[in-house]
Image 1 (tube, one colour):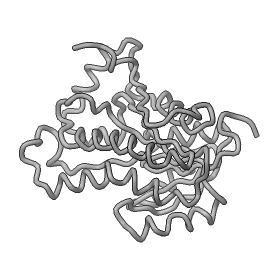
Image 2 (image 1 turned 60 degrees about the vertical axis):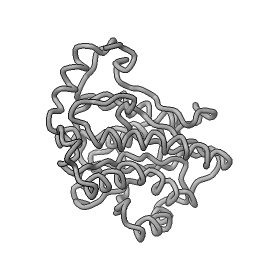
Image 3 (image 1 turned 30 degrees about the vertical axis):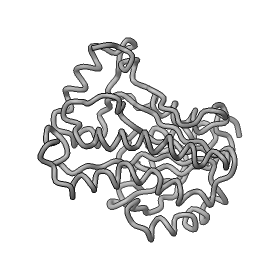
Image 4 (image 1 turned 90 degrees about the vertical axis):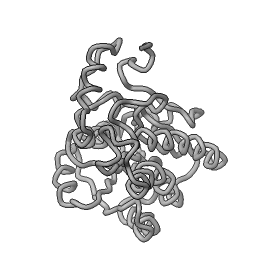
Length: 255
């Protein structure tokens, strides 16, 4: 077995379609020697069907990151397929429609709480659920959308991503003593299922296409997937609490 992730055992969440960043990450990981276990929630049969498009067969475990029973039982379910984990990918985010598309001032707390629970708190929850399976050199990688700015139509999901970026830094502090890293990849806009649920998302597409120094392909998830796999590998042994931008350089360009 050869490749950047040879021998690595990875748990990857968030595969919904083959346009998901998580799907591309699973594909690149397998191509680089990793053994992959996926999680899914809700339409589990859909995840299982999409998973068949990967280079190698993968097991799919049901996981609702807001369900304590699912989280408490995750380690045992993973052990049915692999004897431990070297890396975890958090590719989970959701906000009710009231929290997006310009509804920032009107979204009720109940909806905001849902967005923060699923998109922010679950990063820590997933890491802790997987922790019994992980040892020194382990890596947790999540996905964000640059939260240093307020974006049009992103609203409370932007707040949730800002919380996610902070949570990753705190996780880096608290897991560092165990030799486990926590990093995020800030991808540019991609035409995923999540993007389609955001009213007015085309505003992101137009801006990136026009201004990213390296250009930006709205349908190419592989650059983000490669960054995820690099952070899961042994090539970043002293990097934690970081946000790696994979956005064609857009974040570096002034308004």
